Amino acid sequence: MPDVLDASPYDALLLLSFGGPEGPDDVVPFLENVTRGRGIPKERLKEVGQHYFLFGGVSPINAQNRALLDALRKDFAAAGLDLPVYWGNRNWAPYLIDTLREMVADGRRRILVLATSAYASYSGCRQYRENLAEALATLETEGLPVPHVDKLRHYFNHPGFVRPMTEGVLKSLAELPEEVRAGAHLAFTTHSIPTSAADTSGPEPEHGDGGAYVRQHLDVARVIADAVREETGIDHPWQLVYQSRSGAPHIPWLEPDICDHLEERHAAGVPAVVMAPIGFVSDHMEVLYDLDTEATAKAAELGLPVRRSATVGADPRFAAAIRDLVLERAATESGRAVAPCALGALGASHDLCPVGCCPARAPRPAAAGADSPYA
Image 1 (cartoon, rainbow, N blue to C red):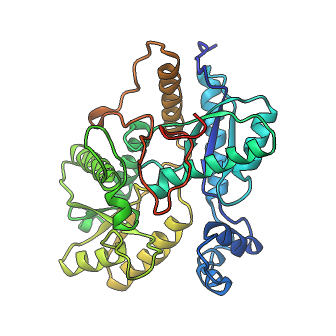
Image 2 (image 1 turned 180 degrees about the horizontal axis):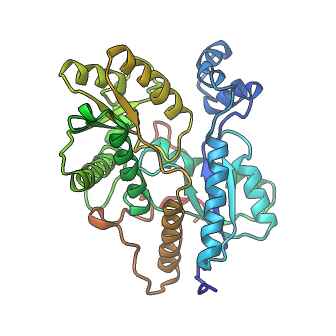
């Protein structure tokens, strides 16, 4: 029997994700949830929904979250961590508010939250915290107990997140034709966001205000590229590139786009490219469409050999990394003398989002931070 691990003062972990449609009839209502308040016509949503309809109207993200939920529960049980794990989504069933109602009915009063976004940004962190604050306010208006909620810190730099992606890149390189393998470039991809949001992401105490989104991705890309060089003896050139832009054309977003990057690499005589989606936890729709469909079609048009490496998904090492972070946060909160989990050269990112972190255009209350109304 494993030793019993102590997660007190916490009594539950909430896996909080984006959500996705699970059938054709779900697609437009799901997109209405995602875009609520933006005034986007239904006909436009139907056009956007074509990405989902190509896959039968089903996003893989819910199935992937079920797999991660199962991996976390198995890891916790095997390690002797008695901490129930729940799952809620921002934009589709199981909805966050319904899961929180279930949790408080089960007597959960001190909850840790794992968001399925590893990096600092408004859309990847603060928006999740705003949704949490909104849900907690709803519990309050319903006369239900309002639990204390803390969000696990960003895990982009944990070895349990980085190492599986490194192995994915090595596997993809090995799958390239031998004659182009040594000259292959690495394209590390993540979701493009407005440059204004990128500039104000963070802050992190060791760097000052803003810029954390790009900086964190560059750190991870550099670690993976260095590990690939150490294991293959080849220094593959690399670049951080972007995908999945969705904003108005007149608003600057992070560039270059992956398809533009493939064209540029081909024009420069690069023989092959490995696309590594380091910005994504699992192979959800934006990976399947923007990389496996659109970018792969662009590469075929160019005659450029490409491979797409795997995301972390429900890798057991990732589940173990989350256990590390749970125990680290629990020790911090309780004052127990437990060493922080090993994070290699990148070091730890902050536990508590400071006031003004990743600001929105129209500020809203956000839970699980230094400025939380539900501290």
